[in-house]
Length: 210
Image (cartoon, rainbow, N blue to C red):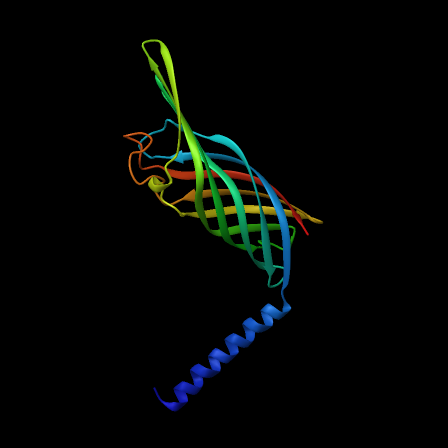
C-alpha cells in the first residue's frame, strides 16, 4: 500500500473515530427497572400440542441514547420459560427459569419520540426448573414431578427480539416477541418425539426510568 493510501485510510479512521466520539459525548445514559408478564411456549413445527404458560419476570436496564432517534439498550432480566403439552392421555407442564441479557437497538420510526421500535439479540442462560407429567393409565391419573437436568439443556439460548415501547414521563410500556433459535434440550429428556423444541415468548412489560 502506498503512502498516500495509508494516509487516506488513516484519515478515514480518524474521521470515523471522531464522529463516534462526538456521538458518545453528546449522548445520554438512562437507567431503569422493569417488570413483565410473559406467555411462553415451546415451538415444534411437527407437533401442535405444545401450549403456552404464564409467568412473571423482572430486571434492570441501561439505555444509551445517541440522539432523540437512536439508542442502544442493554437489559438483565429474570424470565420464566416453558410450555404445556397435552393430549387425551398424557400431560406435561414445564417451568424453567432463565437469566436473559439483551442488546437492543431502540429506534424512533417517526417524529413521535414517545414510540420506539426495539430490535436485537437476546442470550438466555438456563437457571433451573422442573416439570410435571401426568399419565392416564386405565382410568387412573399418575403424576410425577422432577427437576430439569441442567446438563441436558442447551445454554445459552440465542434469540431474536422484536417489539415496541411507549414512554410517558418516567414510565415505559413495552410489548415484545422472542424467537429462540437453539434447540432447548440436547436429547429426548422430556418427550421422546418432542426433543427439537425452541423457546417462543410474548412479553408485556412496564418499566420505571430512574
